[in-house]
Length: 193
Image (tube, rainbow, N blue to C red):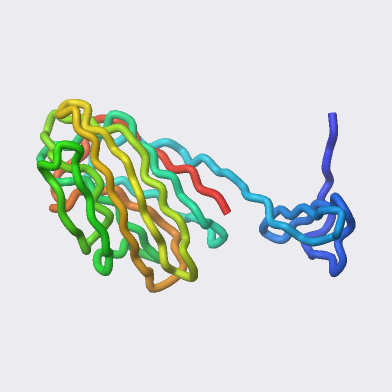
C-alpha cells in the first residue's frame, strides 16, 4: 500500500518531477517540471425529489468548473416544465439564453428564467437523464442536457448559457411555474474542478 503525505499547503516555486502538491487543489508535475491541475470528482448526497417545489444543492466550492446533474424517476404534481437554475448566494432567475425540444417535436421553446430541460410533462410522468453544466469563463456557464420522459416515451434535449453575478455556489431544480411539487424519484450532482 502506498501513502502520500501532504506536509504543506504552499506550492513550491520549482516542483520536481512527479511531485504532488496541495493548495486547495491537487497538482501533478511531469518530467519537465511543468505544473498541471488534476481534477477532483465529488459525488454529492442524493436527494429524494418527493416533496417541495425545489431541490437545492448549495455550498459548491469556488474551484468547480463542471457539474453533472442526474435524474432518477423524477416526477411532479403538475404539468409545468422542469428547470435548472444556477446561483451565487441565491438562485438566478433571469438572464438565461437557450432552448429545448422534445424528440417528437411537440414541445419546444426558449427560456430566460432557467435551463428548461423537460417538455411534455404530465403529473404521472417520470424523468431520467443528465444535465451537464460547464464553466465557459469567469461567471459564465453553459448547459446541455438529455432527459427522457418514460411515460410519454419522449426524449428532450436542451442547451443554454447564463452569466451569474458572482461565483457559482448552487444548483436548483424546480419547475417553470415554481408551484408544482416534486412527488417521486431522486436527484444528485457530481462536480469537478
